[in-house]
Image (cartoon, rainbow, N blue to C red; front, side, top):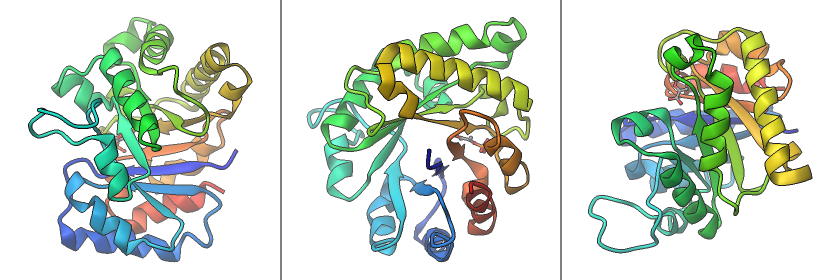
Length: 245
Ligand code: PEP
């Protein structure tokens, strides 16, 4: 399966940061993977213009489940599609914890993303406490079951396994722990989606850097990465992209 390397800029970046996306254009010829960068809403349209004709796709970090209406401050999937976004990250742990986004809300947003013709990157992952209690696999399975809508296919859906305790901390699970979780996610996807579940990409996310990417990409059922901090600088993100061969 062709790997997908996705960058999540979170609430970082002004127009001057677009040079970091543009610098990736030089690397896409060498890259054997799909690349998507998800800047803040304010930069999406500009990023699309600056990457036109390249292999870099642009995505968003969230959207509302409705197409339009009285939802002050929100942005719909249709609005994102209109400005050229192709992916939307949903259910990131920062949104699950800071905005109490529950699985059902994530599923509703994923339906909206699919309705608008975009692809969802649905994030799941356990807390440190849940892992220490031996519940990581069960927690992630329950999140997946309730966060993936019936509109999901291998074309419009990617799963990102991101242990909450590994995001932005420099901590990374062992390769055995990643393998165990990704294999369990694969199993669940096949149960849920039949043969198509075999083709859904499962990304690992949480402190991926150029230096640890190669080893992580060698783990079975790891089909790419969702990268936070290390996606902000083209030099570091390029190292991750080139590790995905
Ligand atoms: C993320 O925010 O999705 C993430 C994985 O962050 P980081 O790579 O900085 O750990």
